[in-house]
Length: 117
Image 1 (cartoon, rainbow, N blue to C red):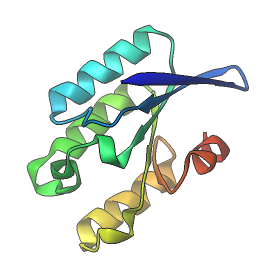
Image 2 (image 1 turned 180 degrees about the horizontal axis):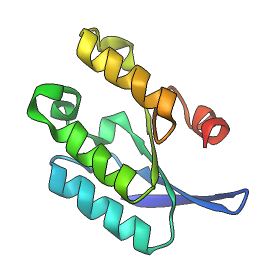
Image 3 (image 1 turned 180 degrees about the vertical axis):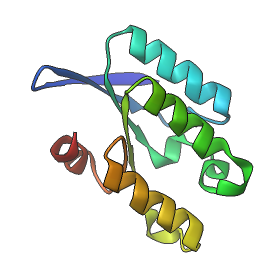
Image 4 (image 1 turned 90 degrees about the vertical axis):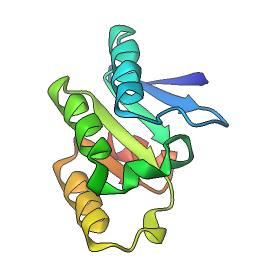
């Protein structure tokens, strides 16, 4: 995994770049948050392809648990990907509500992230 760093309006943003899954469990999400938080990053960009598909199955609680930790530490998270394939009402509502609150955003591109964050 590589970290691409952006500095925008005095905010340190980390974009995680990898060909592999980075988050496969709630513990992975918490570890990632902790490592980047202590490196001074207040905003994190991760690509959908780097998150295990189970994250998007809200029944298992993984997404809620991970995103609650980001919220508690006040670290903004942006997940970049194509979310049109998710058609279940629960995940669509979850994405909609997350984007409305601005703590966690699900966006189509890194350019969209920069505009939001």
